[in-house]
Image (cartoon, rainbow, N blue to C red; front, side, top):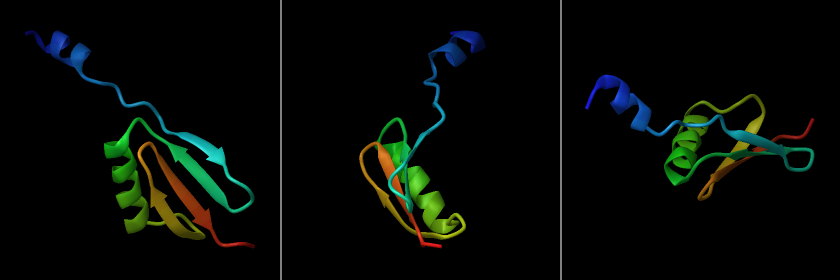
Length: 68
């Protein structure tokens, strides 16, 4: 297998989707559980400004933020 063939067969990670959930939460939509867990770990390690909670699920991570 050539290098180009190897690269062509690798899965391509898509950019996560982002949806507003009410006034104080965001839902991050990813490709699957491994991606959700990776995002969750990263957001627990380095929370976004105002982030108070991160909850991972099979294909999403819910981010809750403190109110103004």
